[in-house]
Image (cartoon, rainbow, N blue to C red; front, side):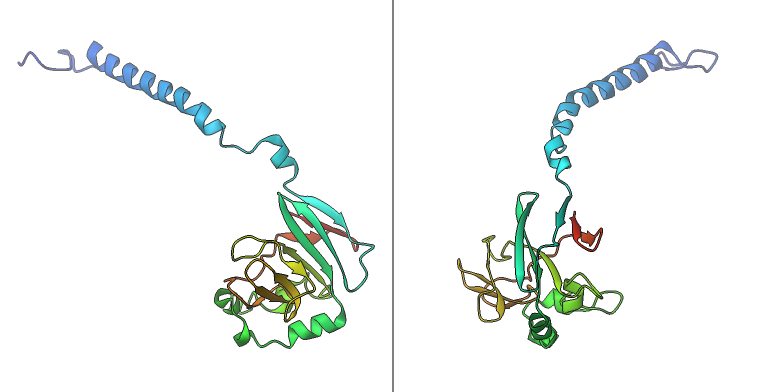
Length: 191
């Protein structure tokens, strides 16, 4: 028999096996205790979690009026569009839109660039809710301006239509639509 065997004569674990296992377990616990403060500091603080969603009362917005609210540090454009603005947005062929990804069909066969897909949906096509940040370099566009009557970013000349879709200028994508829902006829929950 060799002198370097790790088991005793009966074939059971030795004291050396126990020391290897306990040393490994202690090292794992120590590494977790060392890493926890770094992992814990990456969680959002309570004030961020508190504003993860907001509710906005839009009862006073008549057709043609807009409201800008702040959500997660970003401006949110809420617009009660006129029938003319909805008609103008619906009249635009998807092939004329600049945002290639939004023109393409989703799994269900609809494109995210259609006016109905960007608005609050069937029966609420007049409501448009968008993140008010230009997709080019993050400027804030001006409402009801530009060549298409929607939004205009004065920083670099991006023009958005009445559905918030990029039509002209350097911006690569449409204005983004946040997750939102009507919780009543006059209150929108964003987030």
